[in-house]
Length: 614
Image 1: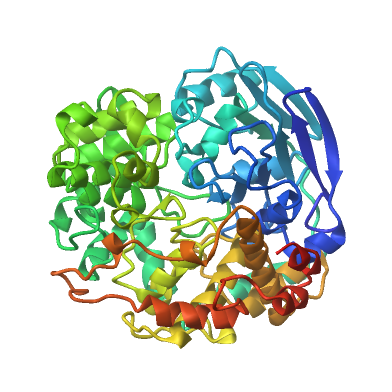
Image 2 (image 1 turned 30 degrees about the vertical axis):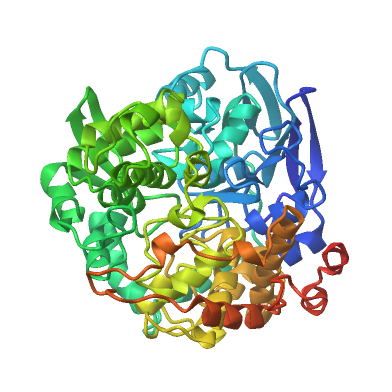
C-alpha cells in the first residue's frame, strides 16, 4: 500500500491498552485520509447523547497520503472529535511538522479513547507507543510543556502536540497546539484532550511509507507548481504572505469590508496601526514555514516585553479577533494576547469574538460591572489581555466567556441573532457581507462558521477553478449559481483536508492533484472521481450532524452579521440567503425543504448505509 501505512493506533487511556486498527483499502480510496477518513471511522460511534467530554468520545489525530511526501504544502494533519463547543462534528486542521512526525512513527494516525485517572502523555516512536506520567506537566503552559518534554524524551527530532491550561480547565474552545505556535484551534478539541487527562502526544521515527512512482511524482510536482493564470489570488498573495504573513492581508481586508470591527457592526478602522507593515516596523519579524512549504506565512516575532524574548505570530485571524473586533488598536497588546492564547491553548478567534460580544452587551446595558465582575469597555487593551488569562483559568468573568457566545447569550437572555455564531462556532474574521459566497459557506460548513471549508473570498478575489466551474465574480451576487459554486468549491476544500493540502497551496487544479495522488498511491483517480471523494466526505459529515440533531433551521446566519453596514465598501449590502441556499441545496442534491441529502445522492456517493439511517 503506497502512501499509507494502512493502520492507525488506538489508545485506550482507561485500560492503558493499545491496538492497531487496520485501514481498508476501499475506505482509503473512498475517503482518502484526514478528516474524511476520520468521519468514516467515527460514524458508528457518534450519537446525539454522546458526551463530548466523556470517555466515549473518540479523539483522532490523522494524516493523509500526501503527509511526509515531496508534495509541497502538505505539512498538515487534522484532529477530529465531537465538539464540546457545538455538540456536532468537530475538526481542526493544523500545520507545522507534527503530522509528518506522526506518520513517521509507522501509523497513519492515532485514536484516543477512554479517560486516564491521572495526567499522562503519549509517546509514539518507530512503531511503539508508551503511556507516560504527566502529573509534573499538569498546570503548565504549552511552551513550558514542550520544552520539558523535549528534554525528557531526549530526541531532537521529536515533535509535540499539547494542551495548556485552557484544555485542562475544559474551556469550550480550547486549542491543541503543536510546533511553533501552530494551533488546531477551532471546535474546542483541546477540552476533549483535557477531559481525557492527556497533556500531550510526542512523536518521532523513520517509518515513512514509500510512494508508487517517485519519478512521476517529481515531474508532476514541477508541473503542479506552475500557477495557472486564472488563479489571480495565488499569483498576488504568495509574495505578500511570504513578506508579511497572513496579517499582510489586513489592509486589503479593511478596504473590502472583510475585517469585522466593533463586533461586526463596523468595517472602517485605523488599519495602519496594526497591519503587516506596522508589525514589521515595530518588531523584528522572521518568516517561518511548515514542512514542505514554499510560502512561509508563519511569523516569529522578536518581542522583548513582559519577560518574553520571542513570540509566534500573530496571523490575520488572531490580529483581527483580538484587535478591531474588540476595537483594540494597541499592537503590543494584540501580539501579547495572541501569545497568551497560544501558551494557554485557547482559540484566538472564539476568544476575541467572545470578548467583543461581552463588550457589545456591556455597551447596550445588558451587562453591568455587577453582573460580569469588571468593566468591559471597547478597546480596553489591558482588559483584553487580562481576560485571556481569566478565560484559560476560568476565573471570574472568564468562566462565563469560556463557554462561547451561544451560551453567553443563553445565560443572559439575549437573542441568538445577536450572538455571532453558526451551530455554536464563533464567526471568523471574514465578514459575510463583504463576500456573499462566504455567507453560504458559513451556513452549511460541517463544523459551523468556518472560513476554511470554502474560503469563497479567495475565489471572488481571483481564484478560478475552471475544471469544477468555479469562477470569480461579483462578490455581492445573490444567485442560485453562486450558491452552487460554493458547494463545488467546498468539495475541493474538503478534499484538501483529506490529502492534506494547505489552504494557501497554489495547487488547486483537480487534474494536477489527481496526478500527484496517483503518483503517490499508484491508484487511478481522475478529476471527477477525485472531486467525488471530496463531495462524499462533505456529505458524510452532513449525515453525522443530522444524527447529532442538526436540521435545516441551523443553516442560518444571525442578524448581527447580515444587517447592512452603514460604512465601508459593503455599505448597504445584505446577502439574499434564501436564494443562495436554494442554489446550494440543489447543487448538493439535498432536499430543499429539509436540508437532508437525498437517498439518491447518498447512493450515488456510495453512502447507502447512511441513507438508511436518515
